[in-house]
Length: 344
View (spheres, rainbow, N blue to C red):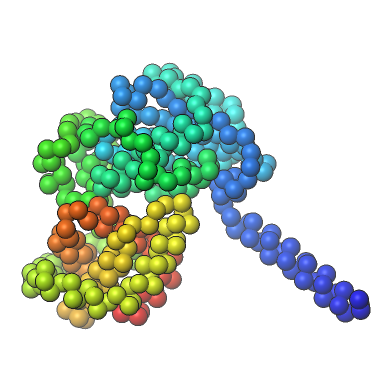
């Protein structure tokens, strides 16, 4: 091999090594810990039926890292209530967490990895089936224990059709239907308590991307939105949505791939969620070409909610999940917002 060829080969190897180092540096510590094989310990609270909640700690050491993933599962329709992960946690800190739980009357004991996965998967399925918002980074936390498998087939026999807590907590978590209709359901036992804890963060039925998610101040914009929505019958709405299928299909596929890469199941309603979003943006631009950003965001939001209310009840939960997945995709990829809105 000639000297120039050797230099070229060595240069290529050095460049490949630098690329690999940059790739590793760009991966979060939680993701590196999740991807590496290592030791895993699982702890879970007991007496799920009596306590009404289960607390799970998953501790892992791998690749020179240590960390913990924590999950809170509600027995009622909330299902998986909270999830987070943190690196840099040593065993003595884990021991303190376990002791702290025991001191609060939450008895923790070791469980198998499969038992932890099954409980978390059941919480995900129960929340999904009742139209509840899942914790934002639950899939990232679940990656610490290698994911939870096909949660859509998880055993939910230990869960109950009930909600016990602050009414505002339920309002914030609901995705499937309006709060007022949910609380009138006869198939779910609801027990409200104003003394129960809640996050206290206002949410909307359908979140917009951060750059559009602003409160509208102009009441004329709201009135215009209501008249626009009222003028479209259910029979007229579907043809309007159909005309945006070509634009929405590749976007829905991108969101489905993005959701699947996070260890979640894409909603079957992603195409309709994208078509609805494109239609509402188009209508808002047409009706209010000179509107401010606040007016525009409010009109678009209200149109989306109006169209969602016309969906067959059997599809609402899947549609609301699709809307949430599209929103999360927007927030994770700001360029997606730009590409979508500039092409409408």
